Each structure stands twice: as C-alpha cells, then as structure tokens.
Image (cartoon, one colour):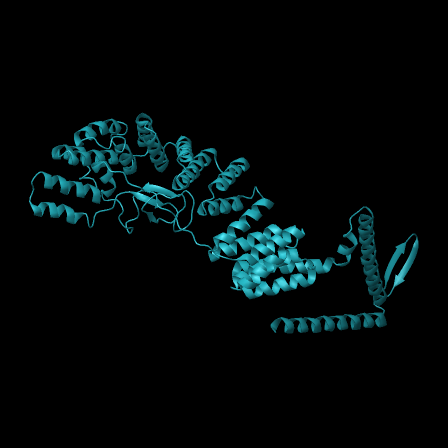
Length: 491
C-alpha cells in the first residue's frame, strides 16, 4: 500500500516539474532572453530554448534507437553463426532479468526462513523465465520449508523428466525417504543417483551407509573402492573401513554356516586392519577351529599391542580351554608382556590371579589403579580381593557400594551420537553412522556395560558367542521407484 502511494506521489511530482519547465521555456522564448547557436560544418544553426530542448530529446531518442538496432544486428549475427536462442534472448532480455531477480529474492527468502515469500518468488520466476528446470528446485525447497512434503515430492518427480535435472530430483527424493526412515526405497534411489554421478561424494557416503545397514557388504566394498579412486577418502581410512566391511561379511558368512568362506573373510579382515579387535577375535577363532593355536596367538598378540581388549583375552583363553588357573596365569604372562602398562593388561592379570586364588598377586597386578579414579571394574576386583583375604563383610560391602557411583569402564561407544553398544557393530544402531564405534569410556550418563562379566570366559575357560543377528524392517514404497524407472526408460 505504501509503495503504491509513493509511486503515485512521485508521478505527480514529475508531471509538475515538467509542466513548470515547459512554462519557463515558453516565457523565456517570449522575452527573447537568448537563443542557442550551434555551428556544424561551417553552417550556423540558431534554436530557441524550447527548440533546443526538443532537439536534445530527439537526439537522445535517436541514439537509443541506434543502439537498439546495433544490438539486434549483433544478436542476428550470433543467430546466423549457430546460436539458436540469440534472437529470443534479445526480445526477452527484460523478462529474463526480472525472472533471475525473482530467483535471487526467492533464495534470500529461503535463507531467511520465509517459505510463503519463497513460494511466491518461485511462481513469479516461472512466469518470467519459463524454465521449470531452474524454478522447480526453488519451489521444492520452499514447499519443504513450509512442511508440504507432497508438493515437494511432486516437484522432485517433475525434475526427473529432464536429463539435466534428473540427479537433482533423485537427490531430493532420496533425502525425503531418509528423513522418513524408508531405507529400502532410499537405497534404490541412492543406487540410481550413483549411476548418474558416481564421483559425487555425498551420494557415495549415503549409498555406503545404506548398503552397510542392509548388509550388502559386497556392494559397500565396491562403493568404498570408488571413494578411494575418486580421492574422497584417504588410503588409510579406506583400508580400515574395508577391513570393517570384510569383517561384517565374514560374520554373515559364519551365520550361514559356510565355514571355509568365513575363515577366508575373517583372515582377510584381520590382515587389512590387525588392530581391529572384532576382526582379530574372529580370525583367531578361525585359526583355533583349524587347530592352529600358534597363528591364533600371533593374531591376538598383534591386536593386543595396539588395543588391549577383554574380547581378545577371552579368545586367547580359548586356545587352551582345559588348562588350570596356574597354567593360564603363566601363559597369559606372555600376552601381558606385549603391552604391560595398559590398564586392561593390569585388570586382566588381576582377574587371573583371583582365579588362581593368589590374592596378594591380584593386588600387586592392580598397582595404583585403585588410587587414580578407579572404575566399577577395579572396585569389584578389590571387593573380591578383600573377600579372598578374609576381610569383614562390611569391608567387602563398602567396596561394592562404591561401584554404584564410580565411573564405568570402556564400552563400544559411537563417536557421532555417543550411544553405548553392548557389542561391536559396523553401523551404529542409533544414528546409522558407519564405522563410528570406538572402545572408550562412555559419557557419565551412559549405562554401565563393563563390570568384569566379559572376563568370565577367561576365568572359566568357556567360549561365548558374541554374534548378535541384526534385525531389519521392510518398508514398501514402489511408487517412487516406478516413477524413477519409467523416467529412466523414457530418457
């Protein structure tokens, strides 16, 4: 409203100024105040003031018309030389300028969070430009911001019609399905987007994550190899993640009772990343099954040097499952020498001494762990030592009571969302991130998962099965896939 009023006032001021100027020139001519004289090629031309103004206006119009003719000639020459849109661009230049201005304003509206204004600018840009491939994307983003997912999906599907915008449409639909948790359809869309742009980093990451979640380990390893080839992942990271995928593949093969392939896959995973604890445990277990205890011990020692872990100790105990506690304590001494100063090594030796009923030895093995922020596992071991040495029940209960408020030991924690996992998995159960689980102390609010129970196989000599089958949900959404397939066939 204010804008229209301002334009009306401005128009009235201009008309009044022109009227006053014309009146002044008429009066000046009547008073013969002076004339304008121009000499051109030796000829003098005399103009009255009003004639001079009219001549100036005519000259300005002539120059403007000449420039327009010259620009049209240039456009015509470009058309003759093969530029098919040169003439049309010449006639619609003003509309094109307004259309691109509307797109710019629409992008600013999206950045500022004004969905309704962005939608209006998208419609305005489409009316000026008639380029759906350019304006539909703006409309889709505005629709998503406004919460109209159906309209956004409709616009993304329309982008599939044009080969130049098909990838954009696929990417938009893919993000919608990911937000909805429809991983089955998202995987198919990611595969089609990857076919169009195999070097696109974001598409590679999404496809790798979805393939890992759906246990397509072969496809995931191919995608990971493509990431290495395109330079989007460092070689050392590729080697580690390839080991994770090989390990996951080995576990699935093991579940299908194909022992030969499981052995090969487990050993391959361990060779790719010897410090990957689950891979080392699985490879060592395969060597134990093949009656190759020395190779199993070598694998465990190599992994223990990089990352001491209760699962490694449990697997190491299975090499000689029938040995006495004293024999086990002696054999584990060789493993302790690999990384003697690590806290896990001290805890392992303390528990082995407990099993051998050497309570002073268990206390010595703990060292100063009880003095430097002890965790629940250390306190539990101290309670067992006090019980073994004949301390009063009040002393034992005192140590156990401290475990209720003590920090918990390390667990498999996702580096992305800090979710604690009971067992290692290649994909986080909470955020679906790939290869983000690390063996570390969880945040203080997390639930305890390590209190010494993991060492029962070591103490008792009984194997445990740490394989937990993953569950998957099947989601149906054939319409989107059919639309993509039909457009791909048409194109």
